[in-house]
Amino acid sequence: MSGKLKPDIGKIVRYGPSRLYCPHLDRDDIQETDVLVLGSGAAGLMAALNAAEVCRVTVVSKGPLDEGNTAYAQGGIAGVFSESDSLEKHISDTVEGGYGLCREEVVRKVVSEGPELIRRLFEMGARFDRDEDGRLTLTREGGHHERRVLHALGDRTGREMERALGEAVKGSPSVRVMENTFAIDLLVDGDACMGALVMTPERRFRIVSARAVVIATGGLCQVYRETSNPETATGDGLAMAYRAGARVEDLEFVQFHPTTLYLAGAPRFLITEATRGEGALLLNVHHERFMPRYHPMAELAPRDVVSRAMLEEQKRTGSSTIYLDLRHLGAEKVRKRFPQITAVLKSYGLDVGTDLVPVCPSAHYAIGGVKVDLGARTTIGRLYACGEAAATGFHGANRLGSNSLLESIVFGATAGANAAAEALSAPHPEHPRLLGVCESGEKVDSAFPDVEIDVTDARNSLKALMWRSAGIIRDGAGLEEALSRIKFWARYLIYRRFTSPDGWELQNMLTVSRLIVDAALMRTESRGVHFRSEYQKTDPDWERHIYMER
Ligand SMILES: Cc1cc2nc3c(=O)[nH]c(=O)nc-3n(C[C@H](O)[C@H](O)[C@H](O)COP(=O)(O)OP(=O)(O)OC[C@H]3O[C@@H](n4cnc5c(N)ncnc54)[C@H](O)[C@@H]3O)c2cc1C
Image 1 (cartoon, helix red, strand yellow):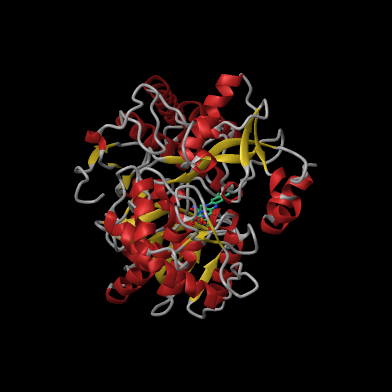
Image 2 (cartoon, rainbow, N blue to C red):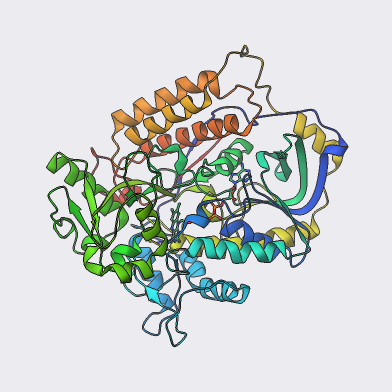
């Protein structure tokens, strides 16, 4: 916890250009706003709503407004609502789950400000599940010792939150929404962020000039072959903040979720931990329950423990097959509590009442991100970050289920309020200056002739490498191999001038992968979700955060 934490340790990593694209534009290509929010998940929309109370806001989203990790969240959002629970208990569970790296002041802030913001979601019309007497139905997830997980429409919590927040944002006269618009880079002058370069759906470059900018671009788990995250999660915000000179932190901590559906040809659909909270069991290929042999909390042990136990069990039995067993819970109960999961399984011919469900672990959540302080401020002036794109220190070295939506709305609200307050006192960037900055990045195109790149192939190769070498169990040799491959690919990919989002995403993924591998190599111990097979013990000297900057 803070106070006991050793000083952060950092590394300068100069990798790739400081900007991906530097077009020549003129004044007609500039549009002005007070606060620019990049991303429209729970964090970005909450930031936008708070900022819109006092100023003009523009929300940029690279897909439709409601596409992102938030919409896929099933299990729920944690908050202290039951009489047997308390803020201190939630704080203590979170800190215990964080393996010594939680920043206590951040944990206090998120846990204590969370319930009020969840009530705001009720007021916006988010339909959280209640019993016949109107009381919230709360469930448990791994690491939470109390029932404190609120859920909506069974297992559609994220989609319902996104709907309610999205409707509120669309109903606000102060918010302009730019969907299907890709943010390429931040425009930073000296130590102040002045806006961003974006590409519109018509494939036109635009500068969105802003008095303050909020990064809320979500996670990065698309850098892994197996992931529960949708296609949007390519770490764009993290990569652009790093290119702009912001400090990034805790990147070695990527959480792997134990249970995603593992069927050839089917997407890696997440099966929420709440199923295990309700009593579902994990079985090996011989249909034997194994988790009690690995941890006293069995199936509800922290996610890193369960994921590693599954790998261990696969090795022991010589079979990659692991099942989730929901049969004993009663088909009707499962259908009612997890309607979405039931429907998806049914579409692949699986009946939750009679069939075992094949599952595997997959990359799920980025604990690290753009470093922020308690006020969601990054190390660059007028630049804020929140949600999965940010590193606040809330989760420490592991994340408890349902704590990330909570962190997203709390830091989203803080980022929005503080960005708006700063915007009100900051001047609008001058147009000639802005155009000059936009054009002035490193030249990235001259070194490469016009040879064709198969972006999908490069992306898949990177994802396979990261899964193999920087996945659930890592070692120095594998990480070194990953580093040298990424550096090699970068020689012909990172300075290339791509002209569409798929190329820029690939460059962002290379940047993020490089930073993850660097951080994982530095941390010569095992802690939380970071497991090094040659350093299996937790080392008290490493009770510190690792940051990187250019
Ligand atoms: C399958 C699944 C289940 C989960 N279940 C839970 C759960 O039950 N409880 C819980 O607490 N957490 C859960 N999580 C984690 C949680 O959903 C996320 O951490 C959280 O929603 C992150 O919110 P966010 O607003 O930061 O990012 P997101 O919701 O991912 O939003 C990011 C936004 O940024 C936009 N964006 C990205 N790059 C660009 C760019 N270059 N230009 C413009 N826009 C861009 C995207 O389009 C998107 O709008 C789950 C995650 C997944 C994937």
